Image (tube, rainbow, N blue to C red; front, side, top):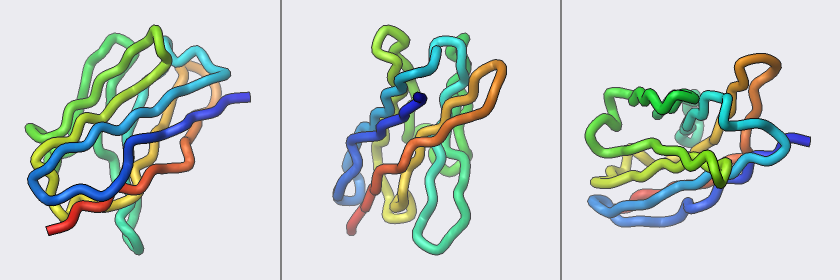
Length: 116
């Protein structure tokens, strides 16, 4: 079965940095797009960053220049390096994997809290 496991969330002060990881199993993630979403408490889920199977990246305007998405296909892992963190970055961050064919998959999320 497909499983996505996120890690790296926690509490950090504004201006600090944090790196999230998501490791996939049971799927050929090398041939999939990998995506990070986030959801602040009580608010809709929003797209944060994407990385395609050919390593093309996109970012939400709110995080561009501060966040970097990357992938390590040998480890079936996608990363989100977050720097210059702001309180508005607080939320549950979700990993999403989209194969060329078939359904997409979601992780259970990891909580990021940015304090003043």
